[in-house]
Length: 111
Length: 114
Image (cartoon, rainbow over all chains, first blue to last red; front, side, top):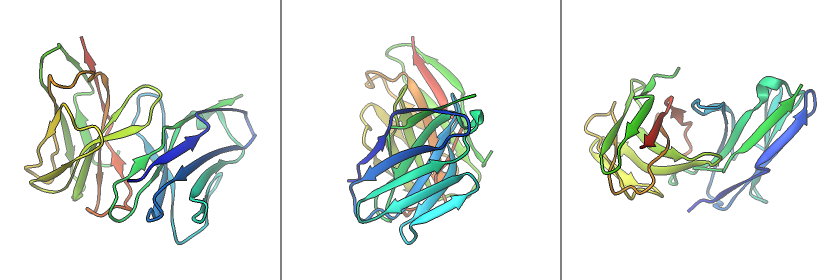
């Protein structure tokens, strides 16, 4: 089955700096890679996703890149703001395999 | 907030008791999922259901049971056989029963064993 690893587990940046979170996956059949943001005690919220037919996707300050050959994908947040502070989860799934989540990255943006 | 609800928000259980967590969705989604989240950890799949009257074990099904008698409802029972049930439980649904689909999460239930 799929195995998703996520790094780093904690990340602290200064407001305005960029943050990068990386995930690797094991199943070459995986073709859908969402990223979720979870604030303390709340439900995970989808912030961006990418499918295997594209290499990069952007949505304002958030971008995701996918390297299928190396089986890794990354979340990039530019111009970070204190409200970006949360736990971020990556995930991977395929048509026949259920979604598997990374262990999460706690991002802290210092004002 | 997406049409998927969970109740109660907080639940306290005495050791040896079974408790049932509710999950309801009005999104007409085919598939539903239960995850467990422990502090500082990711989401682990307990059970999932791709269609009414059918469900499959996830990675950590021991000590849990589910039913899917209606498309809208997927309750999770935490039995006394679950040795360490204190956790945050999240229900999710997806439009189709295939993988590669966005998961929509409920607000979660925090279960504490006294």
